[in-house]
Image (cartoon, rainbow, N blue to C red):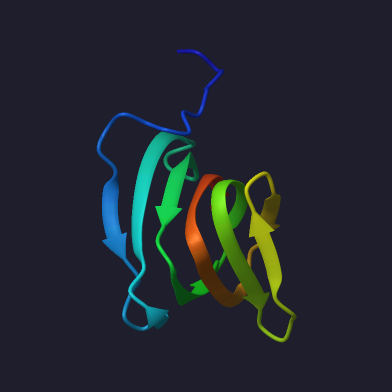
Length: 118
């Protein structure tokens, strides 16, 4: 087993499709695609590519740490009690455990993600 994993930003396999949970949906009708590409430590660490269409929903990280690198599109994140921050292609950010806020997809976004759960 190789300990080097290349993340394919345009995977050829079929993604998992999902929608915003009704209790988290704020506006629009965003749909999501997830191309899970690797998992380690019994599913505690995951990485892949995720895509979302425009819309707005609540983001709640709980105990999960998430690193994101935006490949395309534009989003705006607003942490509870904070000011909006815009991210676009080429930007990277981390949502730390306990993050609560609003995720607004302005232009369809595609990102590479790495999540770490306890």
